[in-house]
Amino acid sequence: MIEDSGFIDVRIGPPVDTFGGAKGEPNARKFEVLGYAFIARKP
Amino acid sequence: MSDITPVDPAALREEVKKKYRDVAIKPNDTYHFHTGRRLAARLGYDSMIVDGMPDEAVEAFAGVANPFSLRDLKPGERVVDLGSGAGFDCFFAAGKVGSAGHVIGIDMTKEMLTKSRNTAQSMGLRNVEFREGIIEELPVEDGWADVVISNGVINLCADKRRVFAEIGRVVKSGGHLQFADIANGRPVPASAVANVDLWTA
Image 1 (spheres, each protein chain N blue to C red):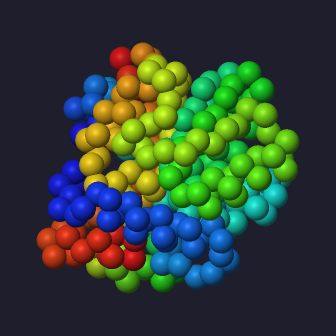
Image 2: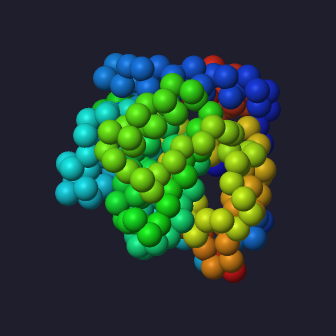
């Protein structure tokens, strides 16, 4: 979707356990929800 | 992050406003996500910078990862933050871009805008402003930004393709999109995706 918008050089950082220890952890574990950093450049 | 969103965009927007209105007013309550300084440390934000911020700048932070982890901002850059909330990422960015740079935070929640504007004023920041708007229709001119950032917001939008198209409009050629968001490794049932109440639960 990012590239479809005209961006290039898309990179994704390592996963982060965003919800670990929070109330939302059970649902996050159930669906393997993690946080990520993304970067892309407009040519 | 799927672009297939079988929910009413307006209903989803109201649900998101309601949730983050609560975070703005009661940042120390318990939510399904972490908030504040503990979250910033968990996500790897530079503690030297965060420790120097007043509580009101950090307490309602509710990001999901660190949009500055793959590329640092440079002095003089113009930055737009999509869904700026109480302003934490904007304040962090303001320190990076310095007085020659400028940061615009966009948010649709009035309580968050009030909080972020008051905090910017109390911090004496002159290179940050907050504008009311939705990220599918950014109140920013074409090609203004060197960098667009966002943290845990795009996943809450019904029309993600429109959001990315808007980002492409406001970022200048050679500029960057650097954002943080969540993604699921296992498919969420269609019935859950269609339930707007679950988007912020």
